[in-house]
Image (tube, rainbow, N blue to C red; front, side):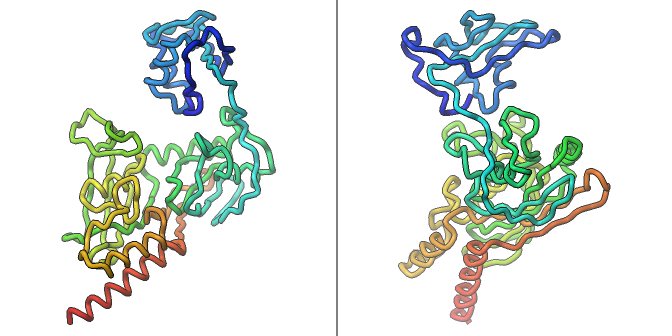
Length: 350
């Protein structure tokens, strides 16, 4: 359930309840706990939220409250009722400029600016890439639960810049989604990370799942039964003594994959606040160096991560498509300053 639906369920008997979801169970549904069933059917619903709602009598089956361990049966009518009325989930068109790299009748390639949220969600219901796409696609309002919303095959984080492919038809969506599933999509990122590398290239292979101590973070687990397998290949592009510009090639596409993997090997992405990259992790403890880094945090007030290239097979023509994008201004300015300072350090040593 959406986070803004985490209402205070106390004293529900004295409150008017509003139906947020109504689901009729299929005839062929096997017996399944209702908390597990709703996790699969409601976007962003966690088991904890569903169990809390059931405990407060907000999960109804055939108009009667049930507990979280209730076994869903074929043709049950499930209702989720909450004290607050449901918000309008229609995604309205907004005239937001888009950097469109390529477009045809089947797909569109966008170079997303840093700071833009891809899809509407809690605290970000307007100003998103999807709002801009709805405006671009003939001003048609599209509901989040409808079948006509722009075909987001993949996403990148709000503060990450770079290339995204959007499908414009169901056939294109299915074809592109399969390429992502098969890991045949070619994707490279550039990242500025803390520290220097002994090697020129390497591979990180580690399962990723939510950090139980911080749900905003993903972390690597050694237990093969935990999380999902994630593989990142990286190679050094340029060294700056205390920071390194690298290229990352994704074999899988997990949430925060590069950010979590880089932290795992001791090289957090520069100014990545979620993974500790917004601290001075390498370098000398001199006032001038500290000021230099702080100035760079102002130059690029986000994680230094950019989705640079994207390659795939066109869903209709069968031709190989490949796109590249330059580093955005803030990222490039940060790299330039690291480079000039690194050159100065080398001259001082010589």
